Length: 312
Ligand SMILES: Nc1nc2c(ncn2[C@@H]2O[C@H](COP(=O)(O)OP(=O)(O)OP(=O)(O)O)[C@@H](O)[C@H]2O)c(=O)[nH]1
View 1: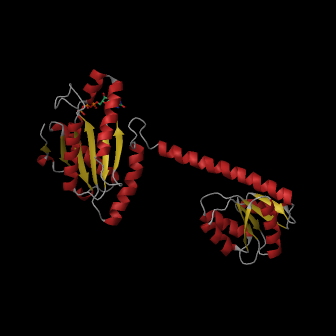
View 2 (view 1 turned 180 degrees about the vertical axis):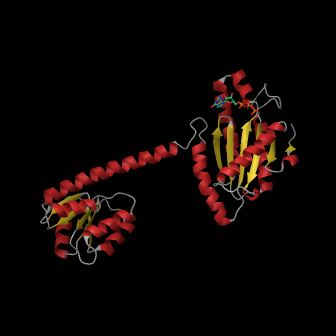
């Protein structure tokens, strides 16, 4: 482990450094706050041994600075000649984790380093598990694409980026046609397989890394296309309908085709949406219109009279 020793007294730094080295850890010796912060920014540090009484910036202030700047928790053990209860309490309050009075006994120092490193490792594992859980909570387990929660999280960031770059953001809302009939006739498990196949056909049409696909609800998907103009979005919708035709997922109970098809509503950031939810709402309205006009087609928000149908 890399142990950062912060002490303005060279003699003490060297003694503590030697103890750290003797217990098979790597000491990183610094004389004050500037060098300490610099090391923390550039190097992985596992534990900090911090002197309290230092000129310019004392150990308590430096601890507050470390806690403010670095989100990852690094255990801090104070080293001080002052063994008063008040001093210890202040150290913990400032963000420190343990306290050792000088002169430091090597065995105790090692035991404290070990204990702190153990807690730090558990904290790291917990953080990783939380990150994984957070990720999983944004993924639809059936189709492996983003779920609604994941989409709404991403959409905010994509929307902001689009405003900054003054780009054109398109959003496609897609809904499988006559899916109830599919489920009712082929059964729910085959309905699930159908959703998986549709998701993979849709995912295969994504072009750039920034494009996103999400399962927005039961048989409804959303595609988010940054840097995509309205006319490009129209083409993308057309390509999706063609790709699904090619996939030939049989649906004998659909009124529009003997295979699974989708209807698509398209919105675009240039069409007046004030926020991401309005963009979704616009696409949803266009989708409603696509269904009303006969399904298996794309409709643009506000341009509902110029909806076009693809060859059926
Ligand atoms: N298999 C399966 N079916 C689902 C799932 N989620 C929703 N559904 C089904 O999707 C169907 C949606 O039906 P409707 O909303 O009536 O839509 P539709 O039959 O596709 O009609 P249109 O959209 O108007 O063409 C219902 O039968 C739901 O039970 C799911 O996770 N798995």
